[in-house]
Length: 146
Image (spheres, helix red, strand yellow):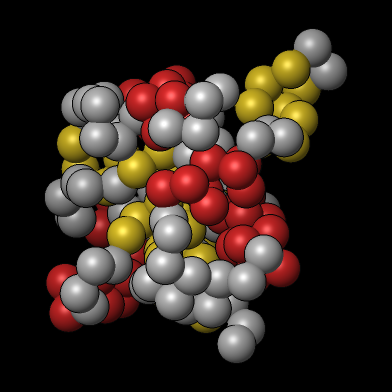
């Protein structure tokens, strides 16, 4: 099944009506700490490195340790929708079957200086800044022994 594409408002509605749905925020740990959708978990698909952003080599290891049901509804979000599409594609190749990319992500999608899709934050949806043992990448990767 191909990765679905939904905007933040439709994602919130789908999550509210789907049992065990999870929002995976694939932004960096720092971006996540500055604000994320309420209830999201953080598993970065890319991390800052010496030459800019680089793929996170542990992404799929952590995903498979945390999300053991490959049919679970998973909503992948980042800042605008690009990294989350990459993450959803990787997960699909790994056997996950119920994936949605959050178009507009957390901060909104901008093209040529114009906001074309409002993000989660600007759509008035619930945002939190708490980084806890349940949602932080540090604690999630510890489950894998990394």
